Image (cartoon, rainbow over all chains, first blue to last red; front, side, top):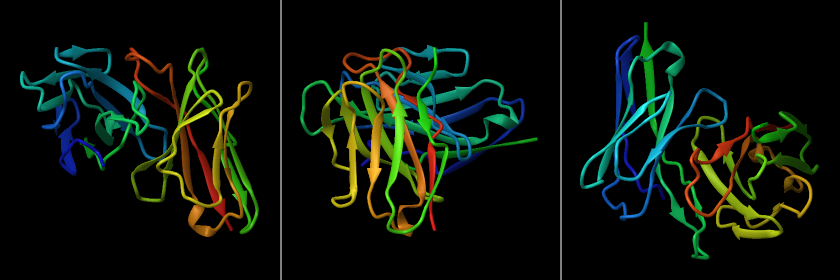
Length: 115
Length: 116
């Protein structure tokens, strides 16, 4: 099961910032938070990931609370092409232990950017 | 630097036939993950492989499904005796494994399997 909870859907006006929240209250100290998105029928696309500090790249910013129990993905100027399902993921250690992890996807947030 | 390559993009099989889906990871990536996405549903983890090893197959159906990642060549997801319920999009991802990758896991464009 996914370790994160997200709202089912959100709307955003084109050109405005989209702020997508995620709760990961059971996250441990050395686990990263990953964000992916899936535009209809395409393969999931990596957006950003972070551990403790806020992160920014060409696509988005990631704000992680000090207690690391939640985070927010920010798309600073949403466009119609940003309409997608956004997934917040904390990796799962695989059954065999060691340092191998896998991504377990939850239901994500359907972000609809409106003109 | 090519991304994760999956082929074929679309595959049509009759019930009872075998389906073979191929995935070539990104250059330098030795870890491969397969996911299935049924129509209107989320991505479900199937199997995680390293070269010549299955690391985690907890999401694989017990029968008819198998996966391999040989020392040379692409990873193969094989579905024997396909049924209509196998119709789905199958996505492959790769990573370098080990410590955190700066770009996370990279996904391919998927193979859409249709069983008629």
